[in-house]
Amino acid sequence: MAEETLTLTVARPAGPTWLATLAEAVDERLAAFIAAESAALVALDPRLDLLASTARDAVLGGGKRLRPVFAYWGWRACGGQEPTERVLPALSALELLHAFALVHDDVMDRSATRRGRPTAHRALAAAHERSGLTGASERFGDSTAVLVGDLCLVWADRLMAQALVPATALAAARQAYDLMRVEAIAGQFLDVLGEHSPEWTVDRALRVARLKTAGYTVVRPLHFGGGLAGRLDSSAAAAFSRYGVAVGEAFQLRDDLLGVFGEPARTGKPAGDDLAQGKPTVLIQLARTAASGPGRTEIDALLGRCRGEAPPDPDQLRRLTELIESTGAPERVREMITERVTTGVEALSTAPITDEARSALTSLAYAAAWRSA
Image (tube, rainbow, N blue to C red; front, side, top):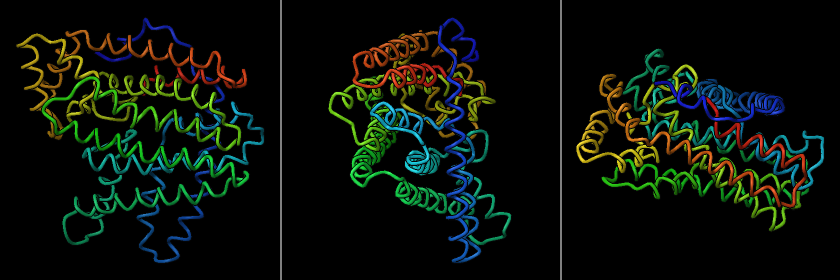
């Protein structure tokens, strides 16, 4: 059953129109920066065009641009004044960091598609085959994708340095940026560890969500934006943390649902992708906990069979999806999303931020938690 059908009864506001406008500004800034950086790279050797073009596609091949948007409202909430062009390079740099993480994540997960297109390592392997290069195309794809991710990480630092803000403000933003990178790596390690652990709990899955998703997607971008404004006091930082953890967890819980029930045409990933990768998500752990003895045994057996298959058997995926749904775990996850959005919005009620930012962050909470892709 499609996830859209499962959530029709949930009332939520539509996404704000300014979200698309800000995302377009980020895309334009990224495109101009990457064009200049790619030209400089190819000037070193024409064969570096494959590296540069793959990095460009990884960054500009779609995405919600939520991290720059949260950072923008962290900046505005703490007194940041237009024009946005002064901080746009720093906001856009977060998407280069995101591309670094996604490219490496896809290599680790052996993912075939991202946003409806071949992942970087798959595209590079295909380029190896077309070019008649020697050696294993898969090894070439993996190795070069790691370098693509590394290049995006370096580009993020270079673009951030172009922000027209005082050095003290940029240094304050860098503190949040550095914490974001450390926490994302920590969360990714725990995610990988969970895939290889025979027992994983809901609490551990939520801890991964806080580190890998909440901190990296919402909390630290808000702190980053506040740092750019040069006015992030302890009260605002604490409110951002409460809001960010709640909304970030809701974002990841929604991702868990989409990974099993989402429409591939919207998510850009194959149906049941999380099941095939053996992701120890909150949804899966809740289903295993709620299942009866025979039911849990069958869920675990099917998870074991689906894991690592490319593509997994559709009949096994269908049966596994039915079992997960029968436990009531999807409904519990939707309840958890609603609870966290409510908690996040309440955290803003007394925060020392502008009313404009409070309204925007409230809209963002709903848009992030109830997205369809």
